[in-house]
Image (cartoon, rainbow, N blue to C red; front, side, top):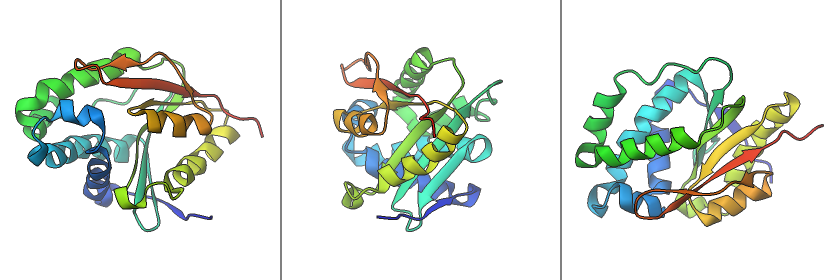
Length: 196
């Protein structure tokens, strides 16, 4: 199946953040991040909007033509980009009483992030009713082609066993998981470029 992939721009930030939040509310870690189910998706969307906005300026944001699937890549090559402007205050505004949990997760991600040059797949999300149709794979393969042509590794943190297994099928190797305080694991995963 051929899936058309588009690169998105800043005008699509809210759409992408909402798509990620919609897909991620079922992930186990979000139950710890935002215990109140009635507020979970909105809080996640607010947090993701900060990160997607940052990626629009310093990374690559792709979507399927119908916008059912999105991928957010952040190149980690050479000097790191500046952090999102006013990050602490924006995070507090988005996450409210759960801000400290999001800060804790940020610290875990930073502590486990590799130092070698790579592209970081920060988010891969597909509308729940469109999952298992190959959209996530198409989004990965689209950017993997560039990574392979340019000899660039990739990195991500898998937030579920299902995700970990999907990424493994695309050449990612899982390291030892790290965990949020309730024990929910994240698997750091690394992909070496494939020679063409």
